[in-house]
Image (tube, rainbow, N blue to C red):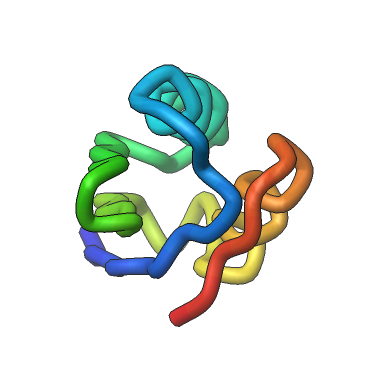
Length: 69
């Protein structure tokens, strides 16, 4: 398992953070996603054999938010 911490932009409330978590946890290989609205960051634990950090960032962008390392 790997862990990645990302800075998230464009969130407006805690519901935004929950949306990111739900979408990330639907990605194959993602064990856990924890997005913190107050800190504007997301920590994702994932199986690198099933998904990549690039796919995780893409999922966040598809959800409507910006993500950066």
